[in-house]
Length: 263
Image (cartoon, rainbow, N blue to C red; front, side, top):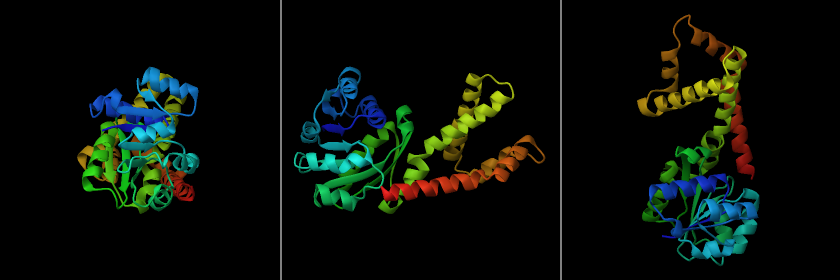
């Protein structure tokens, strides 16, 4: 199986590392293309992959990942669609680009899978939403899910939820990074050295996420386990509620979905 990436930014690089580390493919099974000379050099010198043009990468690939920014999708698709193998699996990473829109450019009979990964793929803890079109068989979908699972978790959802996944998963690492930064700033304000503050805050977030995933308990129940009556945590939670933390996160996600759907 030959795998190609058109575009090789941070997300594509993380995906490539995961695929290679998992042993699902070797360096000779992958090819990538890039716009800038700096990224082309990364492809050959750091990733040790063949670097081709967009058209060459399309012709090479049995599974083709489109890892360019959404605003470049139409131009890239129009330039490669006659070079893509007839039975190739085309995997997109862009918000807002629907299966119908993609099919109108590639051709309605093409095998297209929309995905929305996130940057924790860089450390093997990504979460990818997946939605295939009607031309993709169950076996082909399993092939792509296996590739996506090499750098985290992957789950099939209906297309109408892809933009919701963008908000709750694709973009949400930025929200969490803001939270970690703010938590660390609070610790620094009370005297903790910044490097230790980041470590304490980040590990607390990591451990809390694992508790949600591994215990199966509702986040509210886990929150209540920390909030002793009259205790320090309850006082902190009271301030967060007063300042509208929940509402801010909900409204941020709703804004993200609106933006994704408009792209």
